[in-house]
Length: 254
Image (cartoon, rainbow, N blue to C red):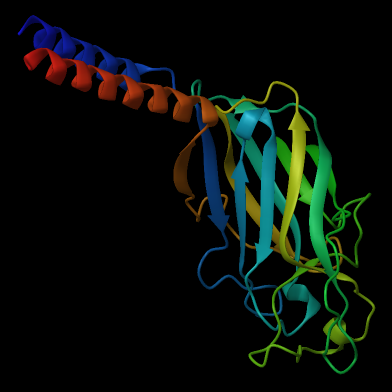
């Protein structure tokens, strides 16, 4: 009986340890353009940005969700954001640097056909610091690849052609980036408690001619907490401990 009582106490203690152990989560946020977002010409735009801070490194993945764009004004060219501390609620602004990026190049021919992508390449974008109290990950800014290397969505429903106007097919904006394009950004002092607090998307191929499509106030992120390895290790140790206590209790009862 003593062993059973001791085992129960041990189980409760371990459960409390797991419950109140320091959180080790990577905060993952997903931003998207508001429903019905349009560019300056009234054409629809649609994009997502998945951002996280695993191990104190900011990772941003941008995707243009609009297939078969009508014109270059629908191409994703910038992503602006601010950072905040989830524990203090205070803004966080320290200069950052793109340490790596990866995307696939897509060249669209005059007839709307396109190349088969090869190996991923650096995106060729830049990061501007302290822009209205935040950051701008940008193709249009100095150091970016504009008018090329904006992010384009998929082709038309046939899967083999783009049917947009000559701003898509005349080659002046090629090559485009296609598919999820990922950026890794190093910022001193970044931790898992730092997260993207607000964001905006820009579309178009010329600075000052692009239209910002929402998300600073009109778009709330979908919030997910993903356990980092330290949390998973603690959980695994707890499960092993619980199994051992249960085995000892059964053995003593016999």
